[in-house]
Every structure is written in C-alpha cells, then in structure tokens.
Length: 360
Ligand code: CP3
Image 1 (cartoon, rainbow, N blue to C red):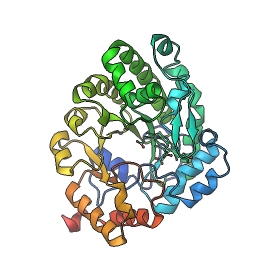
Image 2: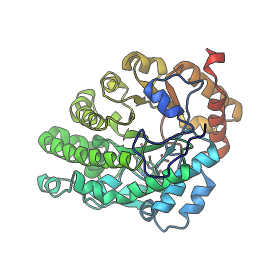
Image 3: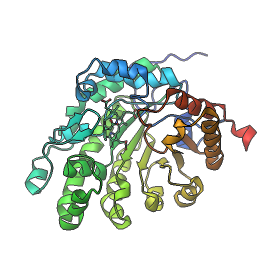
C-alpha cells in the first residue's frame, strides 16, 4: 500500500520517511547496515554548491535566503546518496540573533567586531524566544528542504553547544589557545554562567522551532569542547547540554563534543540518543565509557579521503568493523573543503555495501 507524503511542515513523528535508517539507529532499532552522512557535506566539496554560492556576495546573505539554503541542503543527497540531509546554516546565527553581529571573511572564517567582555555586555543580549524568532529564515529553509526532500531521507537540524558559542562571543573568532574564553571561566564564573544560560535559553527556543519546522534529529556541535579541562567541562558545558537535551524530548539528539574524550562518561549520561566522536577516539574506548544504550557517530579521519580508493575503502571497512552495530558512519569532523569528490563517494559507497549479517 502506498503512503502519501504530506508536504506540510510536519512534527517530529508525523511525516513519512522512505529512508529512516538514521532515526532507527538513533532509536536503537536493528538495521542491515549503518546510515552514512558527512558533517559539512553541504559545502564546497560539491561543484553544485560552488555554483550556487557564486550567486551571493557573502555567506550570510546565502544563509538568509531560504530557497538557496534549501537547495544547498538537498544537494549532497542528490549527488552523494547520503542517508541524511543537514540544514544549510551556521552555528553563528545564534550569537547574531542575540545581538552580536559577525562577519564571515572569505578564506579566513568568522569574526565578531564586538565581543563580550563585561556584565553590561551580557545584560544587553537578547535571549530565549525573542532571539529565536529572529531566525525565521532558518525555519523557512527547513520547511522548504522538507518539501524538496519529499521524505527521501531525514533532515538534521543543529546548533552550537553553549560553551562553543560562548567561546566565539568572547574570543571574537577562532583562537589558538582560547585563553580569553577560558580566562572568563576562572576570573568571572558567575558572568560565564549567566552568559551560558542566555545562550542555552535561546538554543532551546531555536531548536524547538526547528523541530516544529520539520527537523527529524538535532545535533549539538561542541567544536571547542577539547579546550576545557575536564572539571570545567563538567561545570560549564555538561549542565547546559543537559538542559537542552531535556527540553527536546520528541526527537533524537546527537551531542558531538570534539576533543572531549575525557568527558565520555558524562556525555553517556545525557538524555541524548547519539554521541558523536572525533577521530582521536578508538571506537572500543568510546563504547566502554558511554555504555550500551547510545548510538555512536563518526569517526573516520577526514584526511583519509585524500587517499587512493583502496585505502579509503579499507579504512572505512575497518572503522565499520570496529564499531559494530548501533553506529552512524561519518567522519570525525567536518569534511575539508578541498577533499576530492571521488574520495567522498568511495566512503559513502563503501558504507552502503556493508551488511552486518554477512560481516559479523
Ligand atoms: O554540515 C553542513 O553541511 C551544514 C552546514 C554547516 C556550516 N557550518 C556551513 C558553513 C554547519 C553544520 C556548520 C557548523 C559550524 N560552523 C561549526 C561546527 C562544526 C565544526 O566545524 O566544528 C563551526 C565551528 C562553524 C563556524 C564556522 N563557519 C567557521 C569556523 C567557518 C569558516 C571555515 C570554513 O569552513 O570556511 C564557517 C563558514 C562556513 N559554514 C562555510 C560553510 C559552508 C564556508 C563559507 C562559504 O562557503 O563561503
């Protein structure tokens, strides 16, 4: 019997998906093979993306044009055959919605002309619903992406984790040491908590709206997790991740804390379904610390994809073997923009040929 897919924005469980491998693994249901997608798959690795991007002077205008963002979201599904789409946006739209403007500088990355230094700066920020509603263009891009996908694969929504967003708001850019952001935690812990709470309130409202717009799974990117000492990660990061996960009971959630091998036990206790792993973490090490109930996502070194086809296939198969079941195949970080498309395709195809029944 054929089911009719509704193009209407659907609540988490309301829509019909033809390929729901990702959600099944997140929920702990058995599958024949792991689902596969790549962090940063919607981007410069694809010629179609570069063509679309050339229509825009700057990245921010692109992100704020829902039709274009939806097209970029779906491109990797068409070109690579991945098992999920991730909404084309950036983690930095949240600080912007809170009142801290950023610039995306070509070939260099993001820069905030003004940064958070003192209590008055934190007090001046917009937060919660008032900030989230300024991100209407992301919700529109999600709705359009759902329509174009027409149920082919699940759509992933995302946000930066509070510590990583604080780091950008305080540093004003990426950093070698993150010493300004880390200094704040020692010198003004109350102010840091105040800022983290405002970011958390905004992120919760933002992600709830992403779910209402059709996101099937949510990922939190804690890109700078590995900069913190373990005790600070426990105090300044985990409680806010906990709040966010608790506020979003209706969809599966992935927490990707890059570099936070030391926090795996804590992450394993979060009310989330999936833990993302970077390529420094051996699969068995992660499984031993997160317990049996989580799905694990990752974690091939993105540089593997520069190798010849056989090496990519061998390394991918070895990773799949080490993880076993309850695994979502991905890289250990975002795919690098100059990665050869052929290498990406070998990775995806190798995962799609895997069959637990035959291999294990
Ligand atoms: O995964 C996807 O394909 C969806 C889109 C996505 C982007 N950024 C688009 C983007 C996602 C999920 C992000 C997340 C993001 N953004 C993170 C977390 C993941 C990680 O890498 O740790 C971070 C730290 C950022 C901040 C950011 N945005 C940086 C540091 C940069 C510059 C570096 C770079 O890759 O150019 C960006 C820019 C950015 N975000 C681009 C894209 C496609 C490139 C800009 C362009 O095309 O002009």
